[in-house]
Length: 232
Picture 1 (spheres, helix red, strand yellow):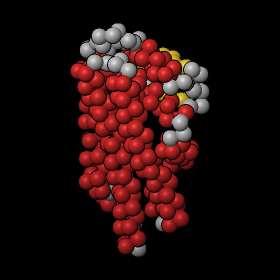
Picture 2 (cartoon, one colour):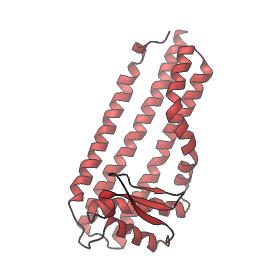
Picture 3 (cartoon, helix red, strand yellow):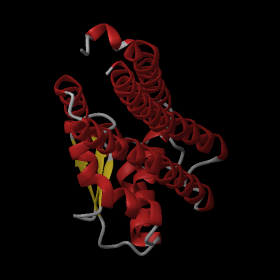
Picture 4 (cartoon, helix red, strand yellow):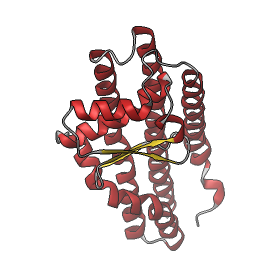
């Protein structure tokens, strides 16, 4: 029979991954705060930078709007809206320009049919289901000793790991597009560009950490079910 003491994989796999994820989140927050105090010399706000980059790419139909929160910035391809947080939209900081350009990078990816972003969008519905039901299904299957439930739960959670894996090239490519655009348009000076790069590099760590957390949880589920089957 399955017991809680069997779940030492949570301690040796998942907890270290979660600590890494928390460190990555603190890193991006501290780096963003640092460069939020560095203003760009040309006086662009995040919203103005986003609008100019969109227009340079012919994306006149994509709107830029402000949303509440901090670092809640995102691009929604369903509505063609780049949403910038309060700390980015009206700010003239180097951090704000970097984040705004990154989100516009996603809009450009979508417009140009960048394959990884299309794949990520396609698996989001399955991933949402997997992130909610996978672990309960696995543990229910272990408790009831129903292999079909266990296997289905693991398969569902595997989609979460795949989503995080696909997210990496999407985010890195958006950051690269942002930095190349900021440099080619001289929107930021050389030193300012370095600051924006540090902000985006710190943000990228959160996606790496998210992948590690997903893989750690997937491996945990596989090992737990393997132990249960050996005990049968």
